[in-house]
Length: 276
Ligand SMILES: [Zn+2]
Ligand SMILES: [Zn+2]
Image (cartoon, rainbow, N blue to C red; front, side, top):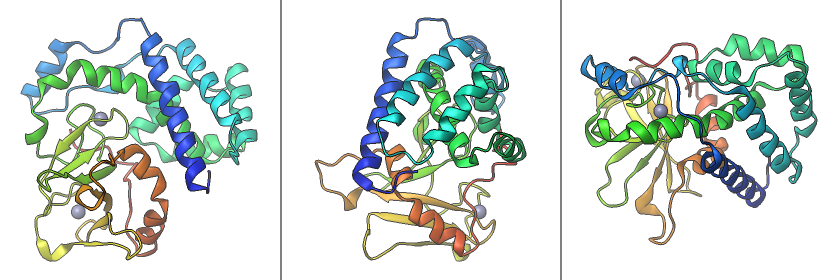
């Protein structure tokens, strides 16, 4: 979307700011999930929230999209024309942001590719916008429920809050512990380092990682059992004063996705939902 690294960071910061202002302004009750539901789900071994049940206030999503649009226009964003197409489709009632967000959360590549084709908009852009539109809502729910689960000890590859697959990981600075990150609700949780987050194999012969000489702070963990991979930042390799922001690290390391995919590994298994 944007090649220049500095611009990419600025865009990311501006989008993050738009999302955080949106959350500050948002005053409606969070519908569709109750703490009692969450307790119940947890007891039966499931993640806390089923975002399928959330009612997204379409009006609010439109406002947030307008904020994004204002941000994107300020950058050399290649797909501004496509963003305008989407804006027009929403205004004409051909597209509903709430359902797009849900489709992305549930993983429905067929829906995205046929929508993209119909409107002449790339799937990457749809995913980018849909994920960003969903973020403030998912984060607000996660914020309300987070204390209910022990994040150090969840021990699954899918998010304890929303059940999505881990999208990125870090090796924590203090103790080298592996922490997985959810791109929807921003939750971070602990997971063993020698275990695949996707198929749970612990067979060390099937697990390895690669890194590039240029940027040793990043690793790509590969699993030869399920042919999946997860990008990871080793915080011990970055200066003390530098804080890692996994959402940004994820964006800026697209070259590692290309590297892993070229070797036949898949990143997201968007068709199948993560195990509940
Ligand atoms: Zn999540
Ligand atoms: Zn695996």
